[in-house]
Length: 119
Image: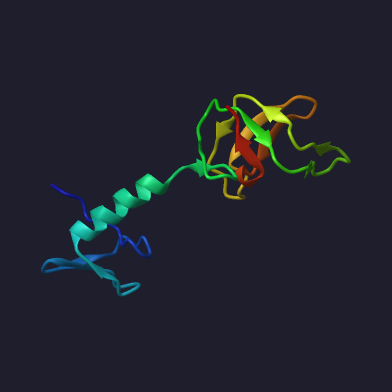
């Protein structure tokens, strides 16, 4: 048996069927199950972390810093061109979606907009 879908607009679980349509009482959005599955598959394709040039990043990639980055709580700066090996892609709320170890600085989290993928 198929479980009840969530609203694709507000992610509410209190939706109800009305003939061929599903209706969300919280945001008044109406959709068919076929539209919902298409939107979910499109969202799955877009999910991923991209670097400053739009390349997808994955665990274990090597990257290069493209902008001088000030280290919070220190007078140090991570210089342009610093190469970082073996990154980890993380899901962080604050936008820092890359976890890595930088020589001379230690473990850090970086934003993907300040790095580019190395070959």
